[in-house]
Length: 374
Ligand code: SAH
Image (cartoon, rainbow, N blue to C red; front, side, top):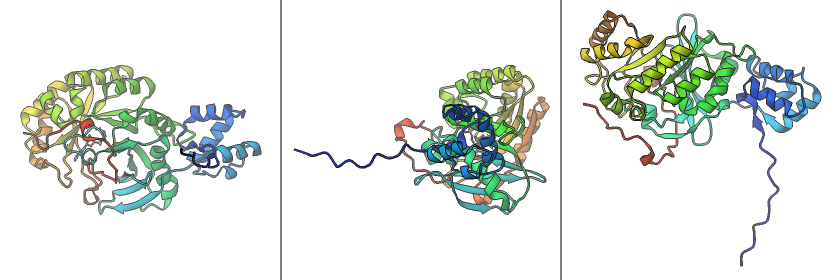
């Protein structure tokens, strides 16, 4: 016969982290506690505009509400566990999101401003053949607080950051597939655009996706932000191998979703990302196929020189080929930019982010990707 273990005192209810609450969620939370909803706006502004997370310091809130907040809520951004600076000015921060996982955030300066490249997941399940994040596996989605917390820390705690230029752009091009974590992404997008929080221009917040078609439609319906699509190949056979999610949502479906995005937001264009892989997708015939494919989508093409990482099975296209590829696109009437690699020396460039992720995804759940492409 076995006896039950002696009962420990029940844990107090876990406190809810308000850092990731957008205005609507905060109003609902506040109203459920019998307080007036305008307090939600005050709290939002304390947290995100002024960087105050100690409820005691929110002096324009009623005392009773402050007590309640202290008992039931908290406001915590993930701690920064490390910071490295590239000679080119790019800065990479490592955020410890739990005892097993750390994600990376990159700050990319230009002459006057900075762009923040945030992570949305610890690892990534999509396993694109040329990406370091995919190669290390997937552990979990980040919470809204862990996503916006990257910005919060750099914005408020990073005032002594080596580069004192305002952050003007936020791009979801760090670790993970933002649309695969839509539930957390959505409140963060609200916070980024909310004047009581960060007040970014809707033209300066970009969500980048490998092509999760149903969620592109949901994003179009619920948000007005810039959309970048990681295309990387102009035919399905090649894209199936480079970006395995293509097997679920092939090119025709993806481009149709892009057109629907534009129908919903007619003043926008889609940013098409295309990584240049030596001998794989960088031939002039690929450029012509890409131009044909994009005839029906208002798009701007961003050619990304491949950023190598340890164990990568690809090599970067030579510069002369990238320029020739660009020339073909331009001759077909496509606006085309070549993305300047930034932060390569500190492994902070596109596709080099690996953080420290405890992979807990069994192999059979990952898309099989050949190590090299013909
Ligand atoms: N999951 C999102 C965000 C990924 S990172 C997406 O797929 O769009 C942002 C961009 O970097 C994507 O276009 C991605 O395909 C590209 N990228 C990934 N690995 C790269 C590498 N090693 N070199 C250059 N670009 C890379």
